Image (cartoon, rainbow, N blue to C red):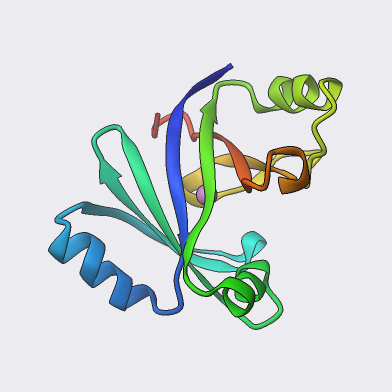
Length: 137
Ligand code: CO
């Protein structure tokens, strides 16, 4: 079961310039900043009520996000749904014919465990499952 939208992921070229928009002008609270090597990004989380905006900037030119930016420019990158048991959700989705990019959870921002669904299975929407760390629901 998807329990809520956890975050909207937005790909950006310049993290600090984007923080100026989201934090200073939109006045969202920047709650976390982290280099997530496993996803090839530097990322920040901003709170919007119980949900988040995740700004992601590539660590290098060979990363998925760098390729996305080269092809499409900055903008909406993915939607993340929160789940309570990511292994069972991956199994359920695969049994329903969804193609996963990640068949096993990997490490996401702020200690979460995440898995991406392939956009070819989801009407073109890059979709993430995220199981937050226990102290960050
Ligand atoms: Co995300």
